[in-house]
Amino acid sequence: MPEPDLRYPIGKFQRDDSPSPENNRRHIAEIEAAPAQLRRAVAGLAPAQLDTPYRPEGWTVRQTVHHLADSHMNAYVRFKLALTEDAPTIKPYAEALWAQTADNQEPVETSLALLEALHHRWSKLLHSMKESDYTRTLVHPDNGVVPLHVQLSLYSWHGRHHTAHITALRERNGWK
Image (cartoon, rainbow, N blue to C red):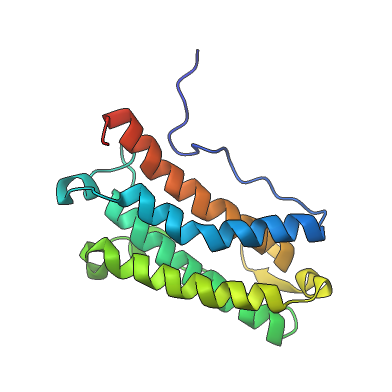
């Protein structure tokens, strides 16, 4: 049996170019659930555990939690830009370098609370959108034109993806 790919515990993101109201509702629900799932995933971890990489040469649990806050803040802003401008070009950021900044050594509670508040606002925004809004686009310099329904599914996957990094590490190491 092949070794599992620790980089993709729930599989790689699969772009779905066929939007549907049902898929959008499911992705919104997953975005709403993400902060609580992440909080459960790190509950009770000691500082040494938080500073353990989820895979060889991967980010630590602490960096992963802070990365989710960084990434989802960018995603929220990208949604607002795409809803208020015509096909705005977004600015990518160097995730690996962001993960090394000093604020990524802070307690994870900072980013957990930030994600809870951010996802609350993001959820309100998503629920206010008309189905036609999900066809609005942004332009990613590396990925081209991206409709909001694809962004929605990407960030739904993204929260589950990184939470699974942490829960899989806990399972492998027998951390209760």
